[in-house]
Image 1 (cartoon, rainbow, N blue to C red):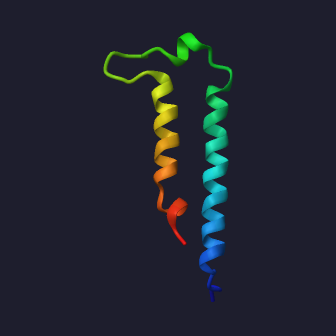
Image 2: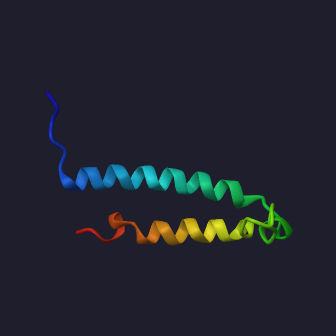
Length: 68
């Protein structure tokens, strides 16, 4: 039989997972030089740095950030 988790413990668990993956994402960009950060790997793709901004923007829009 499963025990029921409280809303706050579920929120905390999800937040910890997001923090873990955010740290891993930042690690990918940490040693990147400005030329690479500002380049496109292919003309169909956005600038490399755009993806970091996109990740940060989406993270801030997640319902988890705005739930009570």
